[in-house]
Image 1 (tube, one colour):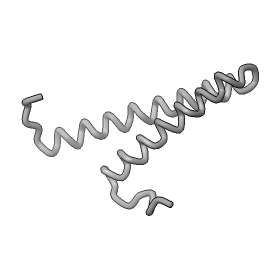
Image 2 (cartoon, one colour):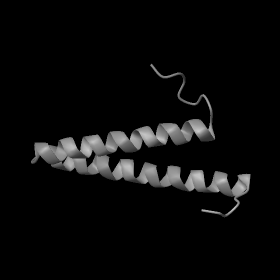
Image 3 (cartoon, helix red, strand yellow):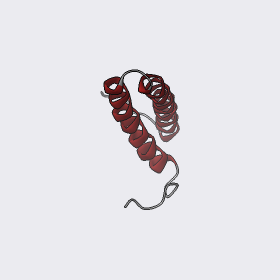
Amino acid sequence: MTDVVDSDELLRRIQRARACAAQEERAWRARGDEAGRTDPDAARDAEVRRTAYEVVLRVLDEILTPGKHGAPG
């Protein structure tokens, strides 16, 4: 990748990535809730994927708004 990106474009890209991660987190949460009633394996898979997107959200939130979630641990 050789394109030079200014800070405004970088911020827009991070915000789009955060919105996408939030949408995926909600989708996997819904899938997990639905699968939890009938398919424990699918529910576990959905929980792992939801957690992964939740972590991505926290990282992107920390980039966009430092200190929003407080210190880890």
